[in-house]
Image (cartoon, rainbow, N blue to C red; front, side, top):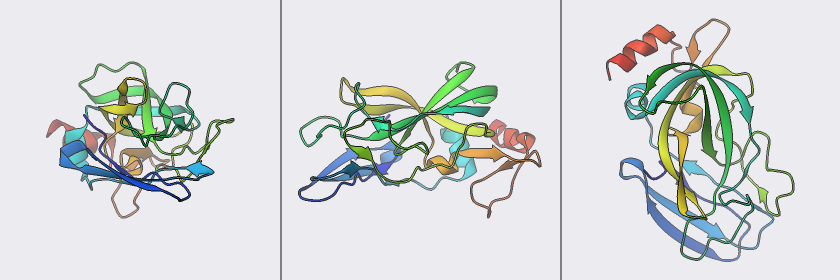
Length: 210
């Protein structure tokens, strides 16, 4: 599967190139690149999924705790930026979110007791120290170490310089809308205050109806 996001890498300008690649459910990804830069980042555009759609698209739905979040780097073995204007994968910054699984609400992947979610874009911790090109932009989630919640994930192919792609566990759609944070009232809360919180049992009834 290709990544279900439209990403627009941004750098300070001189030359602009356009790329088109396929994405989840027929979404097309258009990337703009520009040269002469001090930093590099991405902006994402995602399909709008309802909770029921997100449940249906998930390979796994896990209840767990965020135990660590990595700094951001680029999608090659060294973690450094490279010029992807030639044929091959586009350059993307990414970071990892490690989640300790409390229980699985749905799992077609036989996940381990701790999972690593790959998220495109900058990290709440910023870029890995020492990178020659800084990672720009705001993170697409507000997760912090210690957060408890339910996470909707899918096994995807992530572009990688060496080998073309790598399998990675990623959120279903926009990251901030792909988890429910457990709060002090014991309920699962959406990022948007406009949506009603729900209990785990209510979520399980939606999962079982998929």
